[in-house]
Length: 359
Image 1 (cartoon, rainbow, N blue to C red):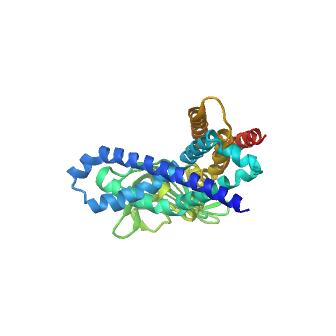
Image 2: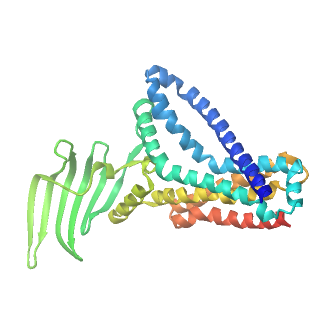
């Protein structure tokens, strides 16, 4: 039992040590490249050093660390396990009576630690960090990445629907229509030339409108040039910020998706983001099993062959993930299925390789 604990501690230390060393190395390189790319902006705009360090780079580090986590988990396992195999440490451990299933246990415990850390980072810690980092970028480096929607159809609350031909960046919606239903019956309809958001009052101003009120036995028509009204919507609902979904914690993301469903907004990319936050940490287990199964056996080519084969599998996994996400965005596949298919396929590969290595 004591020998098992020593082996477990040895493998766990090797795994986590190699992983954090590899992540630290790639983050150092990424920071150096990012500084060299933005140095002119930092100097010319006289950005305070405190803002650069605390608002940008302290939030940059967890984001990119978590982004590269599955890849460097795989590389770490391949690297140190291959070295153990070629130093005959794996053979010695198995010859002492330790089964292959028992050998892989500390790998899975280490993977569980990284998975939990990645899950907490991706779902609760990184989103607020992204918000601060994006605020810094928009303030000092570039303007907010956003676009305006066209042909907008929304349900802003139960039974109340709006339509706009377009919504501009100056918070004006053109060819506006507001419909109020009771059950399946249309009770009221407003058609207007445009609608404008008034920041001072926090209300919408409907300009050059016709109002049609439908009673049981007759219809009433009203015309006006201006109407101030409160609607359950804001300009932010129509300005599409491409990086906004990365700034929501998962509970907030879920609430936003439900709101989008109610309003009839396209929420596919938000669903993909939600499922990625679970699927990506889980991939640590799959890539760990693949890595240890490949690297625990001596084969011709040594460490170089192990790393080459491992990188091929890792990059094919990333490519597969990107391709399946494209199918989800185009509407060909359900977002949850698209995000989890790569994990399911590579889980099958992991089981096959594990059985091959355990023989």
